[in-house]
Length: 209
Ligand SMILES: C[S@@+](CC[C@H](N)C(=O)[O-])C[C@H]1O[C@@H](n2cnc3c(N)ncnc32)[C@H](O)[C@@H]1O
Image (cartoon, rainbow, N blue to C red):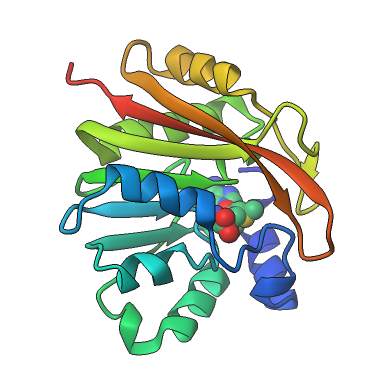
């Protein structure tokens, strides 16, 4: 895994969540897409959630059961502390997504800015395996990465940038015929320091085969 777990522990240990380049006070694009595809009562997982506030809003809006996964225990601790008793219903998982083996299935998988760190083909294959095993048939995968015109690095690490079509092609290469793309949208994220970062958000449905 690029960077390694310690990289991420150090990142979250060194700076507050709202100083990180990927910080969003309200993760608006993710929220819109999740609301479109998730019903209250259906299981949801945020992959590489870091200290994202997506979980806060989903709890507030009555969604759940919610699972939050990240390789960094420090990141999960930030969210757990922020949420306090509101986070008691959340399942927190500290794991590397490239080797994680889910023990249940989910209706919706959300990943903002994790897949693009997987510069190694074996790591992408591991991610795809987890995505496939974790989603129920007909389940939805929302994958947001830096777009083809986005930054080449994130958190000091190299990334793979994707146009939506390129991401769909890569997913189909990893898991032939297992996912169909439903929609894709582009979004410019403004970092806390005012820099612009071009993202793409793609929505895939797991086929019933
Ligand atoms: C750029 S941050 C994005 C955090 C969050 N998704 C957001 O939008 O605010 C990337 C996150 O992915 C996590 N991460 C990186 N590699 C990972 C891996 N192999 N497995 C699980 N989490 C990973 C990091 O710890 C970090 O929290």
